[in-house]
Length: 265
Image (cartoon, rainbow, N blue to C red):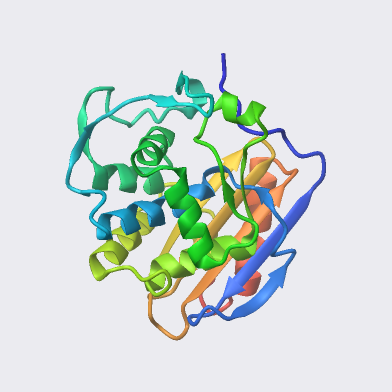
């Protein structure tokens, strides 16, 4: 039986937010409107894990046995299955470093890695990051695949503006402040992204890193473009609802070419 995600939307919606190197908004449309977040919450989880590591609450080098079974909002275990599984993920019981789980959560969008890291740091740690960033539309209230949480009305939402701010925080390491090793880990994971959308609109040789997210009816991407720290670097977040994957990608790529002419192919 497939595990639930979220109800598919019944209308087409698009939103975007483009930031310059300093985090100033250059272009935005419907940027504060909430969308179902899909896998883009993994950026917020990554920030929470890095912050916990810097506070000494988590050891990134520590190894954990891989699991697909997690604790639901009702206190009962649930097990990821079907489309929620990453075929490249190590078998249950295999020891994997926390650092590798963090990278897998981003570069191949592993749900197993995400839920394991959420079990490690807790949803409250993610909520703390959301508050520190001043995000207004982001709610990370449940683990992926938690049917009990869905039945209680708990969800994961974000907006184009919030995603752009989150990516900017990861790339610059400025607010909330990250150490240089944490920032380098984040940049490496984002640059290893296996499911890029915005990046397909860029010229060869343009540095980038991204995190996409999708479930039926929702498809999003947020990317940093250009060398981090350079004056021409940009962060672009585009969220879509009510389109199939091919149509959503076409809209995202077209918008990236329009908004990033200095970097686009």
